[in-house]
Each structure stands twice: as structure tokens, then as C-alpha cells.
Length: 242
Image (cartoon, rainbow, N blue to C red; front, side, top):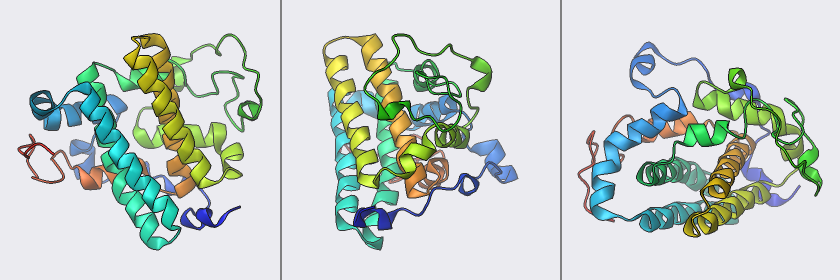
């Protein structure tokens, strides 16, 4: 265990809240589709006016770099920088999906539905430690697809928490970088099926990173974006191009 892991307390399933206030039940997004639709209402008109798909991918990279910086610092300030950057990273990721016409929930659930897609285990998968992958994914079980963002985080904790527990935090984050890079390549080349596969893996590693860090991505994102832009505070963003 390296010094970098001082940033991350041991991940605990109980730290992921599934109970929200009555007001949040009415206002807060529930499913991944809800989160994506929320950001569509806030940013899509501005994004179409100011950005290309490539611009949005570069914004994702900018937020990823802020998380890199936080990991490099290995102190409480670094941890806070990571926490501040995570909802922005998630926002730009969903904004790109909206621009590109990607239904993120469908893409993820097409590969991960309550179990490892390779070995079919619902808990304590270890097959990612090997180099050999089965030629066909485990059969999709729609009944096991999580209903909300905390449940997605818990699902990935159940499946991969055991192996991720012994992985350094920075290694988990590097996997996010790797999968995003592979997604970008496949998207640029027009290989949509392969790109969707890499996007699903990017999300899986993002969940692993949040679990390792001991934070609830849904809580962080809702605090930063309560159905409004985090900068101008408008329900439909009026910010100048950045």
C-alpha cells in the first residue's frame, strides 16, 4: 500500500446512501438516464452552440488532469481537489454522451447487469487478474440492472471490491484514463460497438475509484449541480464559452 492511499479510507458499502429527503425525491435525478437528462436540460443548447464532440472530450481530459493533480499531492488538500473535480468530470462525461447521442445507461447495462460480464460472478470477481477472457459475455439479466446511481456504485463494489481493495488508488484512476483513451480511439475510427464497450469499462472504473476513495458520486454531483449550472446557477446554462 503506497502513500497515495492515505487519500482513500477503506470503501464501505454503508457509506453509500440510498435514503434521500422528501425534497430530493421530487427533484434529484434517480436513474442514470435521469442524470443524463438533467445535464441535457442544463447544457445541451449551450454545448451545441459553443463546442464540438472533440471539445467535450478535451473538457473531460481537463477535469481528469485536476484529479491527477490531487492524486499527486497525497494530502488532504489533494483529496478535496479530487472531490471537487469528480462531479465536473461526470458532468462533462454525460454532456459528451448527450452531444454524441449515447444513452450511457443502456451502454453500461448492456455489459454489466449485476455481475461480471466475463465470469458471471455477482460478488468477489477475481477474473480481471488474469489475461484470458471468455469469448462471450455472461448473459444479460435485466432484473439486476441498478435503478439509481448509488446502486450502480454498490453493484460494482460487490463485484470488484475485493480485488480493488488491494489495488492502489492511483492504479484504479489510471484504468479510467486507459479506458477513456481506448474509447476515444474507437469513437474517432467510427467503431461504435467497440467504443460503447470501452465507455462501459470507463464507468466501471469510475465507480471503483469512487468506492476506493469512499465517496458517493451521486451526492457529490447533486451538491454541485442541483438541476442548475454550478457556475451561473441557471436551470439552462448562460455561461460564456470556456
